[in-house]
Structures are given as C-alpha cells and as structure tokens.
Length: 372
Ligand code: ADP
Ligand code: MG
Image (cartoon, rainbow, N blue to C red):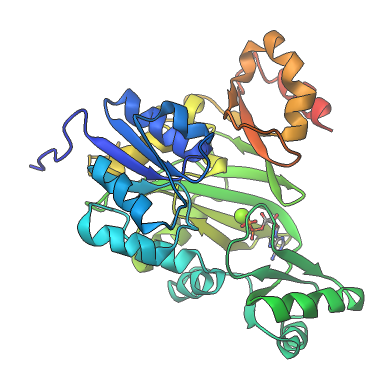
C-alpha cells in the first residue's frame, strides 16, 4: 500500500506561471490542492488562480527557495529553467521530476544524443559551432538543412532553413554567434505527437496520437481521431525513450512523418504540451490532471478514454482579434483565453477546442475558412 504523502490542502509549487502553469493549477485546485506560482511577470496568467505568488526570475535561487517554503512538492511548466538552480532546490525539496531530464532536454544536442542512444529514430544531425561546421553539415547531410540554436528556441524561433547558397552568410553568422544543431530538412507528409504521463512508481498512460499542423513553425491545429495508423509505432518509440530518459509527470514526444511514411522523433517536451490541450474537453482525464496525479505519486488511470474526436486551434494575438466577436454565437467552440496582459502577433493568447460529433463537424470547415 502506498501512503498518501500529500493530504488534501497540500501545496504544489509550479515554476512558471504561463498558460501551462495556469491549467496545471486549475486541475490541482479541482482535486483539492493549493498552488504556489513563481514567475518574473506579476501579471502572468497563473497568478490569479494561485494561493501564493512569488515574483522572481525562473533561475533566482532565493525566489525558488521562497517557492519551496510554500510548497510540499515542486513541478515546472517549461524546460528552460536553469538545471543547476533546479538541482539546488531538488536537494532539499521534493521535486519528483528531478533536474537531470531538464538538463538533457533543454539542449537540443544532448536531447538528440539521448534519443538516438535509446534506439529511437532521429533525423540525421551534426553539431555546428563555426563556418567550417556549416560547410561540413551541408556536405555530409546534404541540402536543405535546418539550423537550430541548441538552447532556448520555441515556436520556430532560433531556426534557419538553408536551402541554397543565398542563405550561407546568414548561416555563417548564426554559427559564429551560437552553438547549433544542423539537421536534415525533411519533406514532411505529416507531423504527429503523443502525450503521456508517468508517475514516480513507473506507471505510464498514453493519450491518443495527435495530428499537428504548423503554420510559420507555430502549432496551428491538433486533431485527434478514435484511431491512428501510427499509434503502435509512436508508442514503441516512446517506450525506447522511456528506457533511457527518466520522466515523471506529463511529457510529449513530437514526430515527423516523411513522404515515404517513415517516422522520426523530432523533440520531447518534459511537461504538458500545446498539442495535448484538447484532452481537457475530449478525454476523461486531461494532460494536466494526469500531470498532477503523477507528481503527487498517485496511481494513474489504466488508460485514457477519448469521449469524442476533437480538433484544437490555437488563438494567437491576430486570431483573437479576428475571432473574438464571434465567440457569443459559438458555444460549441470551447474557448480558452489565458489572460495574458498584452495581446501580440503570434503570441499564444488562448485556444479553441471543437468536439467533432455529428453536430459540430459542420462547424469545422467554417472555422478553417475563417482562419485563412
Ligand atoms: P520548436 O517547436 O522548439 O520551435 P521544432 O524543432 O519542433 O522547434 O520546429 C518547429 C517546426 O518546424 C516543426 O514542428 C516542423 O514543422 C518544422 N521543422 C523543424 N525541423 C524540421 C526538419 N528537420 N524538417 C522539416 N521540418 C522541420
Ligand atoms: Mg516543436
């Protein structure tokens, strides 16, 4: 028998108060837990759903200590937290996710090495840190390649696609300023992802395979159907990764599928993920619910039930401008607005989930039309 170390009313500390922190907090509170948030922005989305708020940079040891003082268990909403700072906190507090996984995954090179060592398939890649490395990558991998900064990129930021010589100057400059990974640019047929949760005891539960469409390298939509041709193949890759990288909580593996149907692991997020948001309405447990259960060391559900096929659309600043006046007419849109203080182009402001039953399938093309 496992004893419940976290009686109702215990506090979960979350590093990061963006939309992911907010949605983790909302799940935790529904289950009877309190939440403490640390964020450098005192208008961040999670601030107004938290019992305690620590206003400090993510890597500030004093701030993290303050968060620990309020918390019985600590988790994070993003992987770019300084692993060293997390290590200091993990020595004296309960941080079930540890810091090693963040350390591996926040660096695209060590991430790819770990995935490749697990036996899962990644796109051919090379380390690049000077002009000569760019030339070598082009020679050995062949054009087109994508250059990505090893640290800190998201939503396609810190990436350059090199298709011909006209991009070389920019590529050389990027290589002189940063450590990069150069990888083969795949001609994509589709992109999918799979979200899973693992608790401290090692139980794992999978969400259904998610089909993702990106526009300008930012997630545009995620569609989930009752079955997917790649479910077995994707889970098999995740199982390999699980044998090599230690996960606790919710995580997502992103995949590419090329024109020949071959599956490659793209990257891993050791936290709830944008492509799992549909689970709030469409599944019996959301990715945030299973994250909370996992970090508390609770038993996970044996499987996740998909109540309805679904599609999720992100609402970027410009989408919200376009769509906001239509919300009152569309109760079937399941609107989420995160509550960020400023609306900006390409900033994720919220999302919409449509449940694709007979009734709403007709709204789906209408929405696609509006978003063009
Ligand atoms: P991040 O999500 O951290 O910004 P990704 O590596 O996932 O970075 O890249 C964002 C998107 O850019 C991918 O989802 C994909 O659409 C496109 N992309 C990235 N790398 C490649 C590649 N090697 N081949 C084809 N498309 C790519
Ligand atoms: Mg990505």
